[in-house]
Structures are given as structure tokens and as C-alpha cells.
Amino acid sequence: MVDLLARTFNVDDFESLARKVLPRPVFDFYAGGAEDERTLRANRQAFEVMGLAPRVLVDVSAPNTQVELLGAGVSMPVVVAPMGAVGFGCRKGDEAIAAAAAAAGIPYILSSTATASIETIASVSSGRKWFQLYPLKRADLMWRLVDRARAAGFEALVITVDVPVGGKRERDLHNDFAMPFRFTARNLSAFAMRPKWAAGMLMQGVPVMENLKELAPEGSKAAGLASSVGAGFDCGFTWQHLAELRRRWHGPLLVKGVLHPSDAAQAKALGCDGVIVSNHGGRQLDSGVSALSCLADIVDQVGSGMEVYMDGGVRRGSDIVKALARGAKGVLMGRPLLFGACVAGQPGAERVLAILKDELLRTLQLCGVAELAAISSELVQQPCTSSSQASSTTHHHHLLNRHFAIASRDTTHTQA
Ligand code: FNR
Image (cartoon, rainbow, N blue to C red; front, side, top):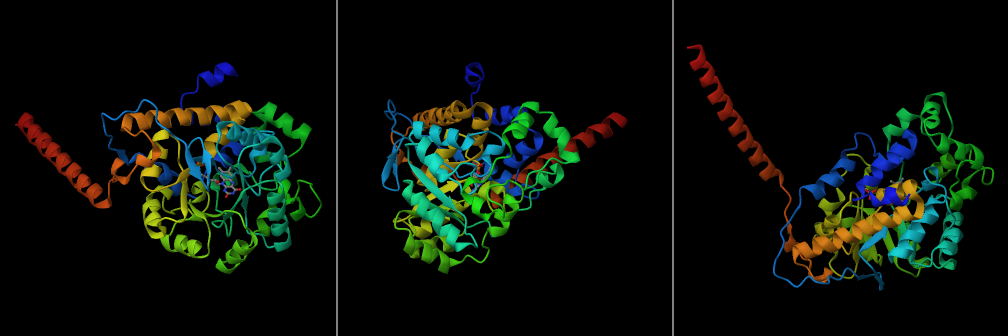
């Protein structure tokens, strides 16, 4: 295990390793996005086309990555994104990731659809914890979750608003990976290829969405649970409901899944403390815009007085710097931590965070930035706009035409 981790050098290494330990349907459920996965790719591309314009001759002997998020200090501006169904890939994976976040000094967001309960996470993590809520048709259950989170010491509430209905995840359809989880003729061979995983499922049973057990018709029985969960989401949840949540929850409240400046402004007007600019990691609306590309307009719109976070495609320390240069207070990271836990439990998730921190520090030093507050929009170069892309395409065509013109002239000569 130690050897394995010592040979991981970037967070994407964990995705490659996770592919080897997880059955294909589970890996695809985690890694995949909706429909053509345009938005999933767009999240990464937005970072890839953005350049950093470094400064030099600055004393960067000890850059400081600490910052205050929601009024308290963190070791770096990174928060663990809420993720459901982690237990399908890693038994006690939620606990492992929460403990890794606490050890690294960053906040952890527990999903409503997590495979560990609010109280269990409180018992394994003494770090900062935020609770993610989905709007539920069963309002009584929703308020009970809020009360439990408060009682267990979760300091902030994150309401996710980009799942009025589930996205169309075609990898899952192809793989017969459905909730409720079941073995079928089609998926059985994929599970059989990972016998250790399959044995765990058979012996320990299928993990359960611990906090939503009450939505299941028969207590905690796995069968029927997840489908009841999906049907339990309230697609009639509107700004009025958000206002009620604001009245009833007195701690910090963040709205996750905002991509439009006007929505961010409305959340601010209702007294929310922050928004998380996110397209759910490309798992919901396909063809939705990338989170990074929306960030600056939203920050401009809400100004100060509201913290703006982003997630989707953060894979490098330099990505964090780019998001901050576009005005984010911090970033959330999802899949890499999940893959880290699947590969090596808590040490795996810790290694992911250590790699990220190392890259963040190195990027700051190479950019001539001694503290996060010194990061400004000047540090990033505008990504290729459609007009510059168009002109580079024209230039490319021009070069190609010249090449073919010369080639055909040459051919004529040869033939002559
Ligand atoms: C998620 N995400 C998510 N978001 C949320 O608000 N509640 C949830 O229960 C879940 N569940 C979930 C499960 C899995 C397997 C994944 C991969 C993602 C979305 C998540 O919080 C975050 O927005 C994205 O994952 C961020 O993108 P990256 O870092 O994974 O690219």
C-alpha cells in the first residue's frame, strides 16, 4: 500500500488505479457524466485553455495557503465536495474521506445521500463539517435532517439546487447500474471480474443511504431505497422554499449548483452566505456551461458580502490558483478524493490532498505569489475566446491551403 501511494504523483493517478480496483459499472457511475459528457469535459477544458502569467523576483520562500472560509481558518482553500453512494466503491469510504479532510485541515461536506450517517461522520471527524441537503418532498424529514446536522455540530448547510430531476447517465444505462442496485445477467460478469469487491457486497450487503432510510418503504432494506430517494426529491422547490430554509437555519447557508449571475444575486438577496458555482461535475444537465467560465460574472454580480465557491474539474494546484484568480473564495473537489479512498482508504484520500497542497504551493512560488490575497485576475490570461479561436482556425486553414497549394505545384512539377 505504501509503495502504491509512493508511486502516485498527481491526482489523476488515482483515477487510473481506481479503474483497476472497481467493477466497471461502479467506476463509470463515479467517473461519468450525463448524456454526451460535454459538460464533464468542458469543466476540464476551461482550466486547460486558461494560462497563468507569472511574476518574478518576489520572495516566495514561504507562501501561505491558509485562508478563512465562512469565518474560520483552513489550511488551503479546498473543501471536500458532497458525494453520495461512496460506500459502493469503498466500505467506510465516507468516514475515510471525512477523516482525511480533518487531518488536512479543510472542511468536509457530507451528502444527504451518503452511505454514512450524520452522527457517524461527527464521531470520526473532529474537523469542520458542513451538511449538504437535497430538497425533499417529505418536508418533515428534511427538517429532521437539518436538526440532526445542527445537533451533531455541522456548522454550515449546503442546499443543492441542480437536481430537480436526475441527469441522464448513459454509462449507467449501458452497464445496467441502477438504483436500487441489483445483480443482473448483463452486469454480473463485470462484478465477477472484481471478486474482492463482489465478495464484500455479498457478505456485508449493499450499502444504504444512511440519512434517507426513512424514505425507504421498509426501514433500511436496500431494495427500493435509492429509487424511493430519487422519487423523494422535490422538483417544486423554489425561491420561497429557500427563503424558509434561510429563516429556519441560523448558521451559514450555501446554495450549490448556481451558474447564472441573477440566481447568485437572488440567493444573496435572500441572505444566503455563499454560492457554489457548479454543474454537479457534469452529472446533471449536459451541454451546461463549465463552472469556471461562469465564475467571474457571478463574482462581479454579487460583489463582496457573499462567498463564491466553484467545483468541477479541479485536478491540479494550478487549477485552484486559476479559480481564485477568477474570484473564487475556494474550490470543492469531488471525484479524486473518492478514487483516493477506493484505492487506499483514508491514506489514499490524504495522499490526494497532500499532492494537491504541494502543487498549490509550488504553483504559487512559480507565479511569484507569496499569499493567496495577492492573487488577482492579472494572473490569468483570458482563455481563447470564440473570436480568437475563430481567427486561429482561419490562420490554420490559411496554412493548410498554402501547404496544399505548394504540394500540388510540386506534384505538377514532378509530373511535368
Ligand atoms: C456527486 N455530487 C454530489 N453533489 C451534491 O450536492 N450531492 C450529492 O449527493 C452528490 N453526489 C455525488 C456523487 C458522485 C459519485 C459524484 C462524482 C458527484 C457532485 C459533487 O458534489 C461535485 O459537484 C462534483 O463532483 C465536482 O466535480 P469533480 O471535482 O468531481 O470534477
